[in-house]
Picture 1 (cartoon, helix red, strand yellow):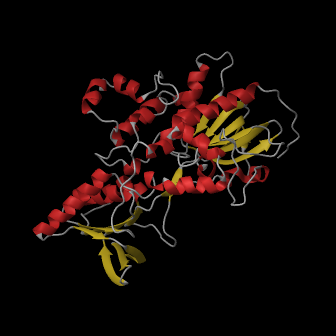
Picture 2 (spheres, rainbow, N blue to C red):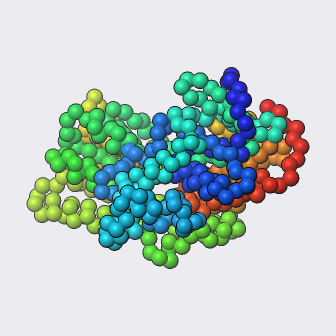
Picture 3 (cartoon, one colour):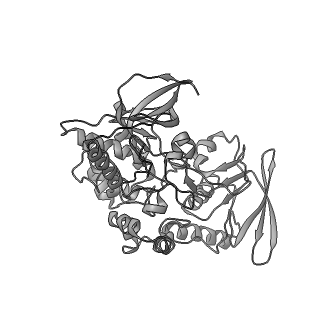
Length: 432
């Protein structure tokens, strides 16, 4: 790979990705720099053309599953002017929101808050810029960035990777003109030239229930088939004691635990986040299904205890074969639209690491070993800190990539970088 060398200064921090996690870090660094004698020089790269966070699932009326108090800053710095309350005050909606008596803003409003915060930090982020490789040289990292068809190299003492999530699909599944993942829902619906007659949604989690609800409400003449392996949607456990798994202290507890205890904690509290649905939405879908049975005109069909057996692409949709698992009975559904709402998984940072990967320490399961401050363990000849935001569930627990602990996590990474920046330097003999 050839790239023109950018002769700019060596940045203290270079961030890969500019979603909520690295946005929270950018704010933490900005607040540090306001009073620091020696400000931290930062730069972030985001491959999207502008700020955006799961835009394909910004369904009107859907609400956040996390309190607004767990915004980009409040759990770290309640006095921050980047808080959700500061956003509301600036938008002249603070009193209106208080009167709304809710801890959970709509997803559309929360996205507007994130955009508002990101717009205040335009000077430290470059959009439409994709990082393609990171490698160590002498006393710094060099980061290869593609922008406008050109490659450039940028230098940094620390790299923070927040590469986000990607669509998770069943083995062998292929997307197409009428076969989508839910992350693309709101991007693809406007492409439909006519209302579908039958939609099939695969999945049992919050996104699956939201997609089912949205399609049923939007296409009032369509049959919507929800397919999942359980007998019904399972409610999310958001009870007060269970929610302690999202507390900052829980990260310390998880990190210090043995592998056996970590596995138990994940298993005990999986129903706080994975393949679960808000009870209010479950009850709404059930009531709607029941009323349709009363009227004798069922548009919302629940294929529970069922599995997807086969999908065949059709010119204007898909032929979907579903099996009811207790009996083995199969149904073939000719769908105008098939949506996989089958979750997301952290993007694998391995491809970005390139040669740097051999300087990282890996566990027996092939996962990166990570320190408590989210810094990847590396060999002694690596010239700086490589940090992860996301992809640390195996070491830091369920909040690894969630919004709940984003503000505190960003502060811990910032503090680690600042502390190491003040530490004595050492000689390096690493070459590319």
